[in-house]
Image (cartoon, rainbow, N blue to C red; front, side, top):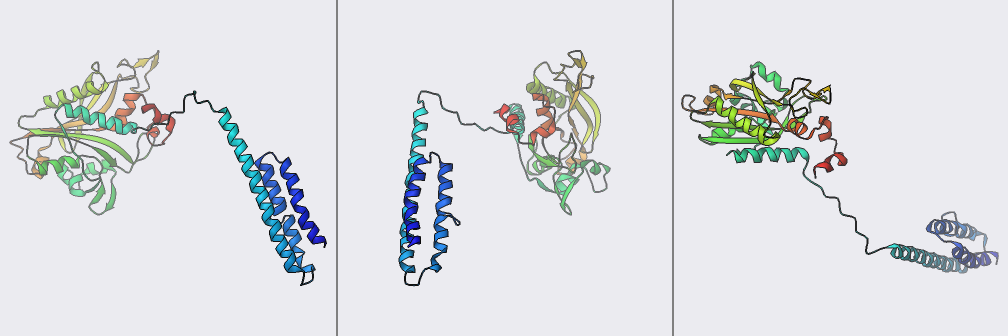
Amino acid sequence: MDLVKELEGLIPELEEGLNQSSDLQGLEALRVDFLGRKGRLAKIMARLPELPAAERPQLGQLANTVKQRLTELFDARKNALDAAREAALVARFDAGMPGNMPWKGSLHVVTQVMEELCATFRTLGYDVVSGPEVETDFYNFEALNLPADHPARDMQDTLYIQDKIVLRTHTSPMQARTMLSRKPPLAVVAPGRVYRRDSDLTHTPMFHQVEGLMVDKHVSMADLRGTLTAFMRAVFGPQTRVRFRPSFFPFTEPSAEVDISCVMCGGKGHAHGETCRVCKGTGWVEILGCGMVDPNVFVHVGYDPEEVTGFAFGLGVERIAMLKYGIGDLRMFFENDVRFLAQFA
């Protein structure tokens, strides 16, 4: 029968093709040609209805035997090619060559800077405290001398979860929480993520702050100045100059902005004959806000403003990191570019 001869002829034809096949790509082409859905075996089987009914079982049995043999031939040739490829790789392997070191991850640069800031304050005797990022209106605003009708609330660009529940706009709520749970004297810093409805080249909806608070008897503006000067010089170097400018914050009175001598130009206002792009020629860069705790804040937490005084301050961690490492684009902190992050490993 012609179909029987065609079936039996597939085996020697495949053997000849496999002997000439030297790679897996050619082997796959042969498999498709012989055993594919539209391959040679399938075409022969499609003619099975042409045979008399009595001959069909015998041909079907032969077709299964041929298919099994074709599959065995393919598997054997594939295993041989795989073994040859592996042997070639082993032959090229030099056990004396150094291996590839695994890539080592590290803490994000913002986390590193935040931990460095907290470690510096620990050396000054401060405790590190943390609290919820979803806050009540009371802790985020009212306890910090920001009642519902206070115009300074507009400065915060608050993200509300629901009425009276917000994503904290600063870590200052931890100051109120700490004072409600402790009695003076106390000195704490509160690091963490904060959120505001703000997004442009210099602002992001989520960023990091470290806020600090000291409360005791006879705490003065001189203590605040001495603390922050020591802190700035520990972070940016002993040559750093510090100046205070009058400002306004609703939870401190008096309040001040703190500048340091520009870390890029050394406070000269220019570098390499050009105006410094960081300080814009002034020789100073703003670094944080601070002030003496407003007596109304003490009243909210049950402290007697006639008995104790205190100071508070807050700084942006990303800003410190940008100045410390000369990073020119805030977005680099959030783009997760491994080339950038690996520099801080």
